[in-house]
Length: 197
Image (tube, rainbow, N blue to C red; front, side, top):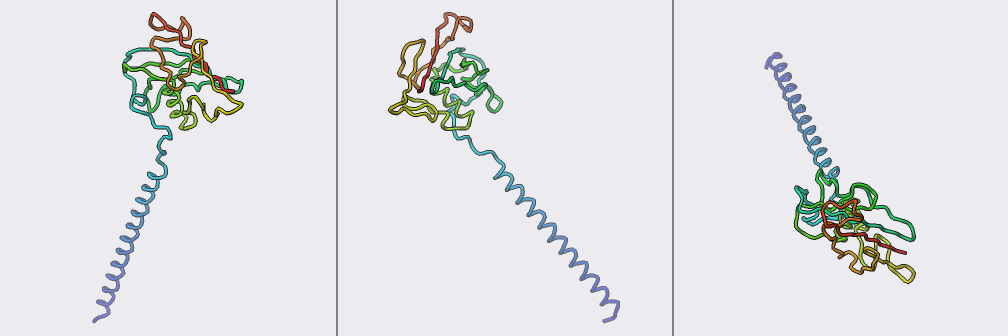
């Protein structure tokens, strides 16, 4: 072999080696990018809500079958416990059937379904909004993380009268805490007071 051919073969060998190195480098970069994307999708995706909602509470309200404004007051160990402003108002960009507009205690039941809603439905929505299962707890023996025991009692009144339906209490339609909040006539008073202590 001549020196020229040997030199050409060496150059061709170098070119082939550099092409292989570039191909391997490109492949490695592509694998790393794919791995980064997969990891980002898996770990940056928000976890599912700890308080899932049934369909009748999680759908977007469109239109209005009825409108009601019950009032809810909660007292824990002698202190008023404020309702959170806006849970359920816009969850994932849509209004849910029970929500608040502020922290006054007025619940807004604005629904497109001809169905009744319970106080338990409200606590479930509240827990979903807070992504906290404890916030969703309300029954005859517990509200949030406060349990009935030998020194602590849980009572509920509706319009000043004792009521033992707790989470099963059905909000009346066309309800309001006062006639000023009546949207439709005749208006049904609905003032719920929950006391733990």
